[in-house]
Image (cartoon, rainbow, N blue to C red):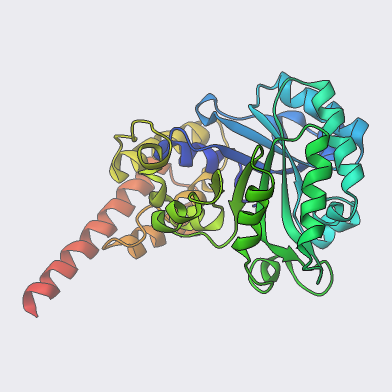
Length: 323
């Protein structure tokens, strides 16, 4: 979810679900140790519970970044061992780390020794054409011995040569049964399933076999699907906000960005799926996406978007009456 789950996206999602755990984009250890810390680590207090996802392979550097995460107030550190992109592979981290479980274990232990935060690992069920269950089982066992108790498992292999990151989310076959088997073999560990999950019914089914479910692009493109998660899955009171109230809160947020001289369009792009599946959603989305309006205050654009959606709804109502 690099370039997707930035702080503006997470603020928006938190308006819809209060308890779902949110994850940052993957941030490399080099970016944290040598880059702009506020740019990578700053967030809104409303985002908790919030995990910082790290990319790296050096235990000393990972430990240093874990300390930064604790100082900045994150709730969890997640080591990414699942990203298959060429850029990540050139840095020798992400999915290629699954071939080096001892190194991953050293990194996990170094972070555990450095901070009090939980350290979790996100990984695939295999790499390239290795479809032997023993491969992922041994990886989990080795890393668990270093102190990791939570494994977020994307139920596809990562093909490290010949496929783009997008193709790696679609072409290697989904094998949810492998993740179920990990839970059976490691009953004391928290096993979270990721990959190809859409809809509350699918989430309920998977939760019969594993401890948790992670959704990425499905939640991003259909954000209102998260509206009942707190109540349905997390034994918490559901958000009482309507879609209109969520939109209004985001407009206030973007208005504050605009007042600070920050491009509000960077936040608006994340809410374009808010009205998906409802009449007028397309017209509403078109207004917010119109680059000619990017210099306008968000409140003025919101008025245009609401008017466009209302006109589309009214037009459909008239058409239905006519038919």
